[in-house]
Length: 176
Image 1 (cartoon, rainbow, N blue to C red):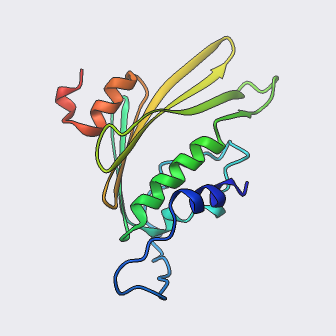
Image 2: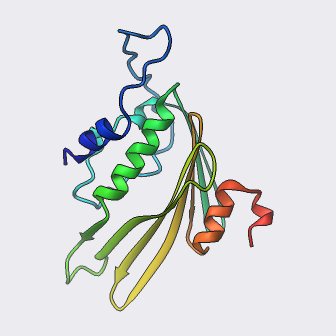
C-alpha cells in the first residue's frame, strides 16, 4: 500500500516549527483514547502501520446522539494537517472494496469518495460511503472539519449530505 507515504510526502511536505529544526519528537502514548475515527479494517488496502497521525492525538472525545456520531480529536502541534491528509489517503485507498464473499450473509461491497471540500474551517471534506448488500444499499456521510490541530468528524446514518455538512460547521439546531 505504499500509496499513503507517497501521497503524504507529496501532499503535506515537511513542516518545521520555529526552534524545532533537527529535533524529532516521539509520539506520546495515550492508550485510553477512543479508536481513530477513520479505521477501515475490512478494507485490505487499509494499512494502519503506515499512518502516524493517530499516534499524535492529545485528546479525543466521542459524542453519540440518534443518527449522529461526532468525534473531536486534538493533535499535537502541526499534526492536524497530517491527520486530514491521512484521512484523504484512507478514503482514496479504500475507495472500493469487498468484504466477505458472495455466500457470506454479512458480506458487502463498500464505496467511499470525497464529494465536497472547503466548506468550513481551515480544511474540510465530505465523504460519501455506500455499502451495497444486494438487493439493497445503504448510504451515509461523514464530514471532516479541521481548525488548526483540532479535527472533528461528524458521521450520520440518517441524514443527507447537506445536513451532515451543516452539523459539522453549524449549531445542530439550525440543521434541518
